[in-house]
Amino acid sequence: MRIREGIQDDVAVLKVAGHLMSRPQVVEFHGHVKRLVDDQVVHLVADFSEVIWFGSAMLGVLAASLVTVRKVGGDLRLTGLNPTTDHALAVTHLNTVFRVFEQVDEAVASYQSAQFKSL
Image 1 (tube, rainbow, N blue to C red):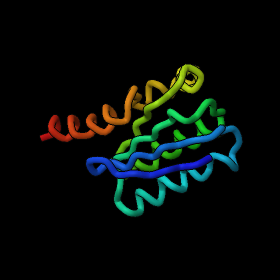
Image 2 (image 1 turned 90 degrees about the vertical axis):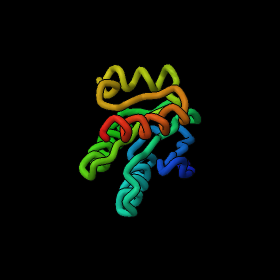
Image 3 (image 1 turned 120 degrees about the vertical axis):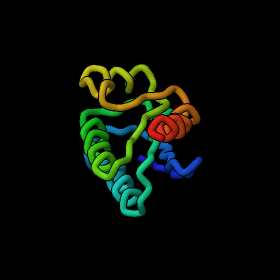
Image 4 (image 1 turned 180 degrees about the vertical axis):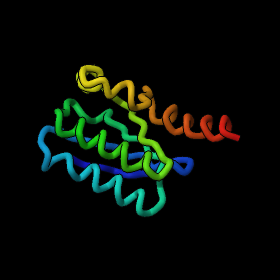
């Protein structure tokens, strides 16, 4: 797995690439999220547009990462899911827990919308 990180409007965008199958391959993602939270970056978008498939290990890591950021008042939003990865979220009902967007820009903009609603 490869993770490229960028910051867009105070939101960390994690561009994930590769085949995500087993625990050793996906545990790096949660470690990356923890480092961001330690640096007080709590608005995250994970872009899976370069991922063909992921399994139960990645689903578990995604859920753990979401808990990590929500404990400190943040959120992890997903984008770039293909029919296979979207199906994995639907079967496990994680699609009801995560906010999922078509494009990175939409996911990033959703943080701005949420801030204005809370004012």
